[in-house]
Length: 331
Image (cartoon, rainbow, N blue to C red; front, side):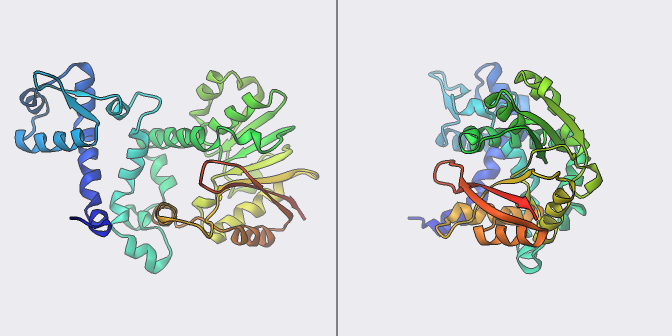
């Protein structure tokens, strides 16, 4: 009988089996029609017995089933392995795949406190994505999916007024969500060029494009940050940067903020009740970005260093995970 430790040690076998289904294009073939094992092997140019074992694993995971004639077909769950579906698992899987080699160098991150991703690829993840359009598209979809999951009720916990500057707003999913919830609100989606170029169709589909500007720039370049905001929103941004970088981002925001405006940070907090998934998520931030999840005290320390005062914590829901708004004013 295996123990939790043993199951953890061979967990990468299981994930690679599912990654292989995606890489071979099995879900797309089964979407067209059921296929026998022999047909699949021929279509894919695959070893029949090895393919059969991968398919059996997918059956155990309830992603694939067989009909009365023994032909394989997708289950309702397996349909989410199709890239075109709005609720597809593929954006998340692609994110995992981009970090797979880097996780193999977790020891480097633990020893140095830096991102193993850069050690493996010779560049940081943002530069990497800017050079890989297909992976950048999947990453933006993953961010949009998690926005829908984590922040669907975000507007119920904070009264958004005036113009919000959505810093690191990516393809505009959060701005679209807030603009739908607050009809008088205006927004500016601010991010790197390769990120915001996918924002127009998202905003148009939500029917809010007329209330949202799109500005390309970097929060490491303070002169590019819009200066006409009432709320400067950093949603799941600081968790991707180390402390020195986070302080620089906050200082640059403070420089751009007009009198009377507010800083609003929206993040998952590493609480005293953190569990296995929380620590794994924090290590993933370290491996991929050189960052981590932070505690309440650590966030307040960053704000103080950057010249912000009057921090105010506002619980923002998301099930059992401690998601918080942190509001502050420039000193």
